[in-house]
Image (cartoon, rainbow, N blue to C red; front, side, top):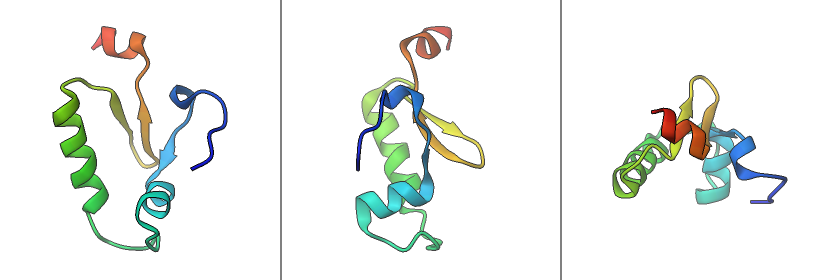
Length: 68
């Protein structure tokens, strides 16, 4: 995955993550990514990964985490 600017300013689409992580077709109905994100959130112990409804995921900024 190429890095352009600050990771906290980017929203990563489900399709982009599936292609980058698994080289899967983005039309897959698998919930593998959702399970992976859920487990990653649990292990991190804080809300560092936010869901952008209808779009994908993004990293929270420290201010976002502090605000709850």
